[in-house]
Image 1 (cartoon, one colour):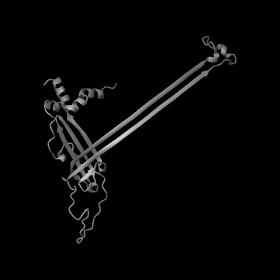
Image 2 (cartoon, helix red, strand yellow):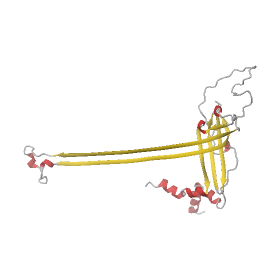
Image 3 (cartoon, helix red, strand yellow):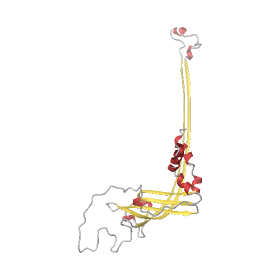
Image 4 (cartoon, one colour):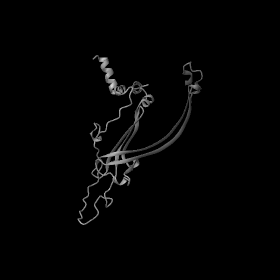
Length: 240
């Protein structure tokens, strides 16, 4: 293979163009079902753990340590259990600021009478009283405004992938749905406490630590709205 052809192939594969070219004339391919713990980028997480405490065993007690009810709890508690994540974000921000700075200065110096020494000055100096004179002025104004409004409402089920030593649960939720030629992808990962799981086996996203929420997609509409990979490369490389 010629060097320039090999270079083009490497560039196209690196930016994902080969995958997009393979989907020309067809809708985006959905990701097959798989175990999230077997993905190449999966890494078990470690969190600060409290000191373990031993619980005395009471043979005649009806209450089991760690239980929240006498009957079987239907909420997620073990690896492989399913829990529903509720993402409700309604954030807004409106920031505005203005700055103005003005500075001016004038300096002058002269020697109209210096014990006769002023006569020794060069003839180019016509008026000894105006040997030095300078003035400066500086003015700076700035305005800025940030206005942001976001509203996201999601509801998707995730799988418990890890139970930490203190009982907290690591969950991973992923959902894909395709409408015509546009594929929408939802991903939520994080750490939750069993106590924050409601009786209907749901948990709010604001009760999730180390939350990573992704809502995006790929397809014809996304391709039109995104700049070309060549333009993105030039925006990164060009210093001006």
